[in-house]
Image (cartoon, rainbow, N blue to C red; front, side, top):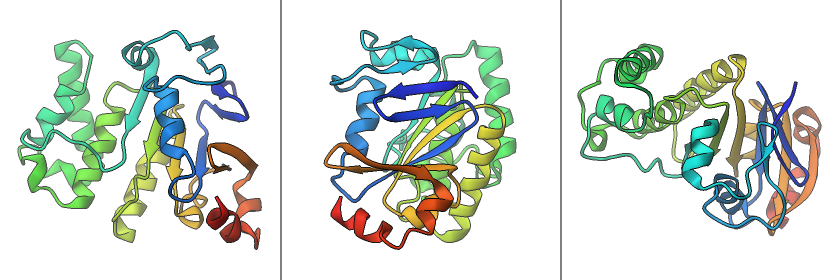
Length: 219
């Protein structure tokens, strides 16, 4: 697998799901925003084989980066379909086909394409946020705390959709405080503390590490 993202000790390859772990305040969101270009980076960031340090957020997105922010940040007054259409850069005809395909792929959205986002349940809103992040078939997808407030059945559906995206070649970096949960999805975990990487290991190694909870609290 070729690395889609490289920055410091953090790498994510095509088709790989990597968990970014750490307690609240460990620097996970800051790192996500730095990768996206909202913040300056103290070290080089390479995406898709090129240095993107001089690129704007819009340019990085155009290269193939998708983002699902914490707390979703949907267009509350727009419908499900309108949220998806407004988030795409594809030509009109292709955009409509892509929206239809995503609505078909997400059971929670399939029956409510014309519902306003603010009327959706928390689980439906998270699925809409994910579908919006996938709308232009990103090569790299960043997710920030996507399970926040979700019931287990919704998390299971979210994990299924992410596994499908990874199987299609998307590189996924997912930030989570719930280490035990996200390590059932990811192949590797990267633990942050005060913005620094303190541990990188295979998911199964971290899951069986009796010190993981202490490391999370310590971060």
